[in-house]
Length: 201
Image (cartoon, rainbow, N blue to C red; front, side, top):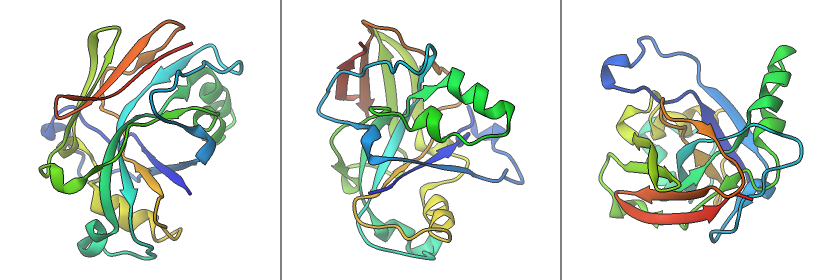
C-alpha cells in the first residue's frame, strides 16, 4: 500500500487560485506512518519541531495506470480526515541540500487517520477542520485545492500504478499550520462531525 501526498495544494480563497498552476509537488509516505483508531501520537526523537497539517485522505478502490481525469473518480470510493505530520527541522535541513521530503514526513506514526466514509455521503465540496486543545486552528474546503482530486489521480497515475487501498493525501489548508507538544489533544472533523481524536505524547 502506498500513501501519496501533494504539497502546497491549497489557497485561502478562490481569488488566489494561480493561473497558470504551479507544478504539483508529489511525495510518498510508507505504510508505517499510519496511526489509526485514535492511538496516541508520539513525537519522534529525531525532531523537536513537529507540525500538524490536517488533510482529506482519499482511498483508491480500483487499479489504474494513466487514468484520465474524466474517469478518475471511478477509482476512488471513500474519504477520511488525516494529519500529515511534518518534522519541520528535519525538512529544513534536507532543503539546505535540495533534498527530498521523505524523512521529514515518513517517520513512524506521521499519518494519523480516521475511518473511511463513502464518498456518496458527501457533496462535491467537503469541509474539514482541526481543533487543538479545544481551539479551532485549521479549516478547509476541498474547493480551495489548486489541483482537484481528478487532476491529482491523473497526474500521479502517469508515474505509478495506483492500487486498491492506496491513499491520496490532498494537501493542507493554506493557513493555520502549527507545532505540537506533549499533552496536546487533537480533534479532526468532517462536515462538522467529530471523526478522530487523539493525544500527543
